[in-house]
Each structure stands twice: as structure tokens, then as C-alpha cells.
Amino acid sequence: MSATASAAPRAVRPRLLGRTAVNAVVGLSVLYTLLPVLWLLLAAAKNRDALFRSDLLSLGDFSLADNLSTLFAMEDGIYGRWYVNSLLYAVLGAALGSMVSVACGYAFDKYRFRGKEKLFGLVLAGVMVPPTVLALPLYLMASKVGVVNTFWSVFIPVLFNPFGVYLGRAFSQGYVPDEVLEAARVDGAGELASYFRVALRMLGPGVVTVFLFQLTAIWNNFFLPMVMLSDHSLFPVSLGLYVWNSSAVVTPDYYPVVIAGSLLAVLPLIAAFVLLQRYWKSGLTAGSVK
Image (cartoon, rainbow, N blue to C red):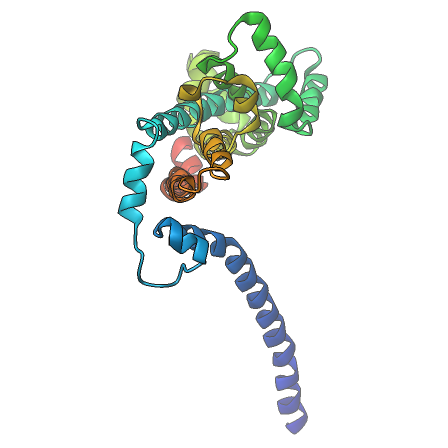
């Protein structure tokens, strides 16, 4: 009886130690993730003098409203134009790009055609190519077509994402049963009707997942706009803030503006993840099949 009682605490100790270690790692990860965001929140509310004094925790020198007002007034309000450009590049590009990627993945999964696996192998090879490597070839192609320094030179390349095609095929394999498509065809639905009315509803979580991946990548896209664009009115937020940050070395008044702009730049991504995370749940599949 006593041996059993003494063995129980020994069995509990490793579990407690393991749980404590896991909680410690999770806590450190959360701190590593949230501390830069906390610094950005505090720094965006301070004026230039407080930033240079590194006096971010004091309750004085609260200048968030002034920083935002200066941000949208700087250079005739060009930051607002950059913000709209980023929304067009990212939201519209991610929406169209996710539909293209999921449709391609669905075709790779459900149809048989010559060279299918070889083509998909090229898609997987494209996943391993860094986007920065493709910037110069894309610039040369855009130069041949005559669309350099236009909206289309940045917008069109972001519509095609090899990783999105891979995810689209994976979601199609897991979410769209062949039996459902066969039943739709028996009922007289064509291929397009079967895709848009049946398969696409089941692929809802996949579309949202690809959309969020592409939204994040396009919103943070920097090198491609820098190569393609020279007109400041076409810049996205990432490139515009980089230009202002470079100017801050000569004109320190840009520092509070850049920090306030960076704070506003992360809000769309946070909003997208908060609003769309519920659509990732696999319960959508059961409702579509019914």
C-alpha cells in the first residue's frame, strides 16, 4: 500500500516537469512574438524626442493623434494612396490568386491528362524558387510587354502561386470525394457546374487558407515593387515606408511617421486572420455534402 502511494508522486513529477517545460517554451515564444508588437504600439504613441530618449514606458509625450495626422498629411497625403495600393495589390490579388490556385489544384487532382505528374513536379519545383530570384526575369518580361512602372507589373505576377496550387490539390484530395462529383454528373451537371456548385463549396477552407497565405505574402511584398516601380504614387505601403525610413537618416522627423505607418500597416493582416479563422473549420464539408 505504501509502495503504491510513493510511486504515484514519482509518476506525477515527470508529467509536471514536462508540462512546465512546455509552458515555458510556449511563454517564451509568445514573448518573442508579442514584444515587437508591443514596442510598435508604444513607439507609435511617442513623439520624436521620446523615441530618441528611448522613453517609451512613460505616460507623458503621448502623440499618437499627432503622429497619425502628420502621417496622412506628409507629402500631400501620399501614405493614403500607398495604403489603397496595398489593399488593391493584396486583397484583390489574393482573392483572384486563391481562386486560380485552388482551381489548378482541383484540375491536377480530379482530371487525367498527358504529363500531369511532370507538370505538377514543375509546380513543386516552383515552390522552392525564392521570389527574389524571379524579380529580374519578370522585369525583363514586363519591359518587353511595356507594362513596367504600371499597376499591372506588380499585380499580374502575384496572381500565380505554386504553393497555392499544391495546397489546392491537397485540399481537393481531402475535401472533395469523387463520389459526389459522379453524382453531380449523373444529375446532368457539367464540369464547370460541378466545380462551382459542388466542389468549390467543399473547398471553402482551402480557398480561405490559400487566400490568407497569399494576402500575407503580397502585403509584405517588397522586392518586386522596388524593381518594377519608380512612380511613388504606385508604391505599396512596404516600399513607401522603406523610402521614408531611408530619408529619416537625413530628416529625423520621418521616424515617428514611419513607426505610425508601420502600426497601421499590420492592421489589415490581423483583421483578416481574426475574421477568417472560423472558415478553416472542416465542418463546412459536411454541410456542402448534405
